[in-house]
Image 1 (cartoon, rainbow, N blue to C red):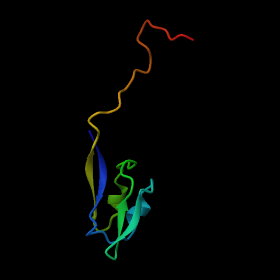
Image 2 (image 1 turned 60 degrees about the horizontal axis):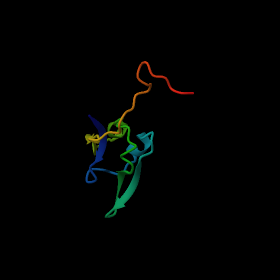
Image 3 (image 1 turned 90 degrees about the vertical axis):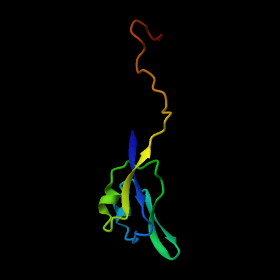
Image 4 (image 1 turned 30 degrees about the vertical axis):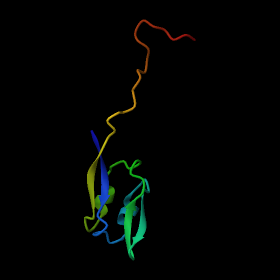
Amino acid sequence: MAIRIPTIDAARCSGCGRCIAACHLRLFAFETHEWKKTSVLHDSERCSGCGKCAANCAIDAITMGQKPVSANPLPVEPASPPAGRFIPV
């Protein structure tokens, strides 16, 4: 299973800020590289993959790619003990 994650093409980004305004988690910010203002995703781990940033990009500088999920997920423990066993009080 993979999570959608935005990728910004810095060469295409115009620095308009529409993606920054669209992100409800406030994960984007402006950075300046070689005298050009571009948008940068600062916290990809918190990104929900909603795609609002890409949908609001007027020049299609943002694409939604796939971010692989860890091959070793955290173990999941059962919510209740096996049948016939009681939890001491």
